[in-house]
Length: 445
Image (cartoon, rainbow, N blue to C red; front, side):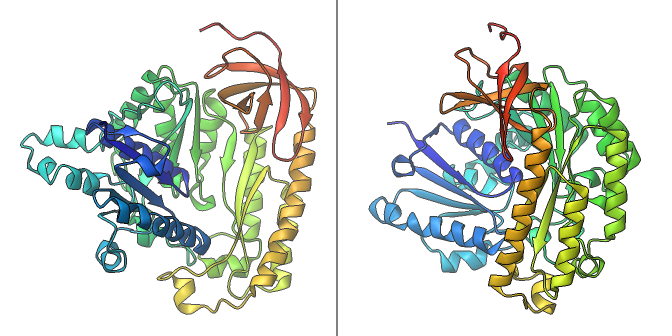
């Protein structure tokens, strides 16, 4: 009987990329993917703890697997990701004795070593070891994604060294480490050969790429190199930080046709005192100037942001500053979150979580309603326009794709559209998606 693996992934795009590496490593060991955890021989839970709700969800999912382990002692359960962190395995082993393997973020090594009973560590050929651990540029997608995946993520910066006072990522993913440009380009070529048309370069602060490599390119330079990879037709990057978003990066986006005019730049709060307490390093005015500069250099672009409500000490008037900024700037996307203290962070150690849960939710709902109105009005401007859409997959009988500005579009068609970039005419718009019809028939592949 074939050995099978199941992966449950929660959280950011970095976790999605990490799970692909784990799946690829397991398939090198002879395992086949299954979407059903109950028939798996190996179950990987790739976790997120950026918010308390994400940690609670991960632990709930983990404990739900306990009966499977009781029924099948040979089942291997692998806990991975930010719940483990870079130094948390020993502590968790005592709390979770039914878990077999604990893996730090972005590292399939502990699982591979466990399944091979350590044999992989005794390989004489270091290059073979490196390739087997899937940490080089030869990423082979899991079989169920090969030829199906249109858009993929490539981590370019691991960890983070900025250390905002609310953020647990530096404590769980470690210090900032940029990947060599050769590995990134090699991975992009490998993905293109497997049918991927769009790649997104990932980093907790992606515009800090290369700052820890004295003789390598920065993110703008990396974009120019990736732009030359044959087969890759669209390039995105996230998440940027206002402090490190340089003129050369904006020039690269404006000049390179494959780099999409969509920017992910969190503001987190609109009040300067709250921003200072968060250790963000910029003011509201700085952020406004950056948005103005981006829109002047890349007209028609889209901008997404992140906002946290209810940060320790945030008054109602300070929250209203955030409301006013969002109202004035009219950004395309606002990822909203209610503050939750994360163990070990500066805000958890030194600041009182003094905004009630009810008040956090009230502020969240106010911003949510405002943003729904804003994005509904922005998207309405697309009505009747012709835009280019890269189609990714069919969902409930309709093809799903995205515009260069990352707008979600659905089209009804019986043709095979996967991986094609086609002009469509927008026939309906809403705040979260749009509907369209094909302007011309797709190429028969």
